[in-house]
Image (cartoon, rainbow over all chains, first blue to last red; front, side, top):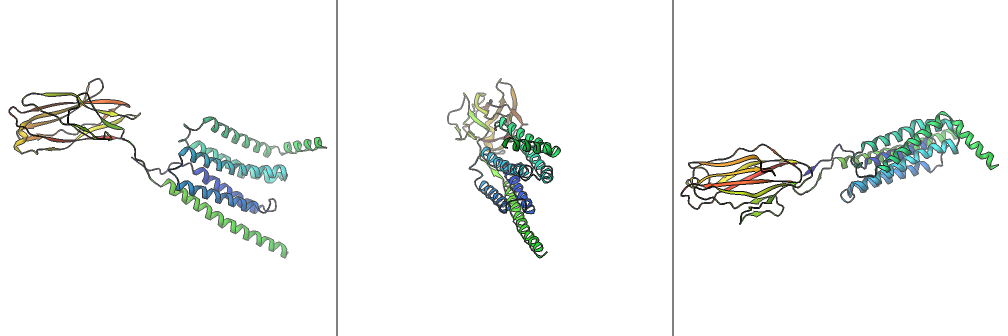
Length: 172
Length: 190
């Protein structure tokens, strides 16, 4: 039986998506270099190179790893990339208190990144029967929560300010 | 002013380097991914439809090690019909149904030779598990000429099911001891 696997979403697609996210973060952190530590753009480049190496290894040992394993290590890489996108958003909003940039970041980067990632995970159906569905549901729930929080911060930034203010008062 | 220009130039160079590096990494990664999706994988799997010996499996017959071929040693009696109720089964070992058909490949002795006149017919009937005929595949003789069967239409064999191949043979009255070799193909769709 000859199976030609063209035009089928491979698990490594998530790693490719993660690489692109890291590269995007690298370029944006270079553009906003006054707001980030100097090493950050290079660290993100290294993370993208790591993902590229990971793709190369995956291709060369395609038969050794099952589809289940390939999916999970690619998905984990994508989750790490998304976590970095969200972390930068939180860094702007909470640590740097640069709400305008945080708003723009959440609308232009965080929200589309999470949406695209969730869309492709939903499209990737070949593992859905074998992977624990509860894990997928939790991942989607977390994604939805992150999107919701980003939108709340976007609409009412004073909530964060108030929270931080209250915390300072308690510390005093 | 000079300091600002210097800083701007430094940032531009840094951005350009990162941009080029990013383009390189992104295109190389996309190329690796593309090579993965366009790489055909060939998997050797066991046949889903196989032969299985029946209760009347004739002595001297052989079933291939992967059950993908069988050589039946059938007899034919002069002026008498010999029936093999269940010499051979066709088995679907898959959990999905598959279709198959019988197709004539070759027969010896060839038509036109005197030896052909020793035979009357060989009839092969495919029966389902209830014994209902699904297809007939008959070789008949007219003088010294074989009338070979036409290819049957595809039959659907349900999952995990065995069907029977029923055989009838007959030789002409006063026939000599001659051997006929028939080659039949079972075509299976996956």
